[in-house]
Length: 304
Image 1 (cartoon, one colour):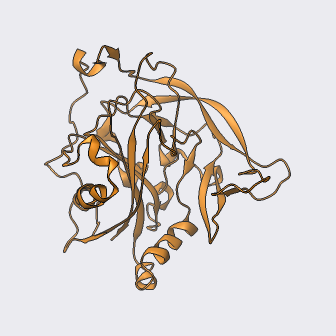
Image 2 (cartoon, rainbow, N blue to C red; image 1 turned 135 degrees about the horizontal axis):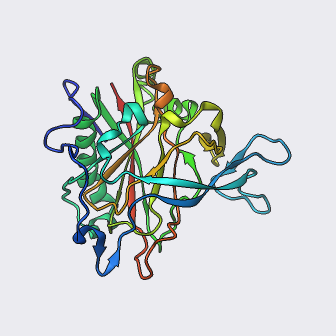
Image 3 (tube, helix red, strand yellow; image 1 turned 90 degrees about the vertical axis):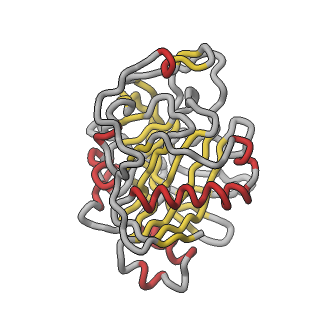
């Protein structure tokens, strides 16, 4: 699905302003159905990249093959302190940090609607396009090319390994794959890949999402991983731990919250900030009885 705006629209529309004052905690947003929502900084174990012991280039089979390990690289589990974005959302932007937050976003979809793929595309996709066109600086055209729903009972569980969905190579390949007739022209202008993430049964208390401030992530930390599909090859990036990295999470994300994750930006003036490592994580403060997290992420090509 493609939507085009006649002119770029400024970021941070007044209809959805960032909070201008510090967040004040109330009993209503600390407790949900008798369970206390974890807030504030927390130290957790995250899974980073460790190179294959045989020195081979890292790769992953998207569809596992009999008798062959699905991936050949290892995990480096490291304790990291996550700061809470709640109450300081206004400090972060896509251009400066490669992630952004939006609150009080209404939707025409209820939870049951996300069981229907056609409704997702006909109702929720246009909402996401509108959000991006109105709030991503310079965006003139949006092409949504994929979405993933994660549920405890589904076949797509939260990804508990630090990663970035795209590399410069795979971002360009996405343009060629989804817009082959226009790719040569589009690749000469600015193009970005942005994921829009939200819970379906918030507030989130299990497997919340952690993000790294892209300004604190060095290029040497990023390792291209070849993804081997039956009919093609793609890439994502694994992430090695670096003590300079600063990590955050957005406590108790609600269904009306939207977290934007920029996976690639062709604009070299902000290119260093054009990719955000992220991962689901286990919060040791998760209250007993908390429901499993359900979420949807939409992936978008943004031109302009």
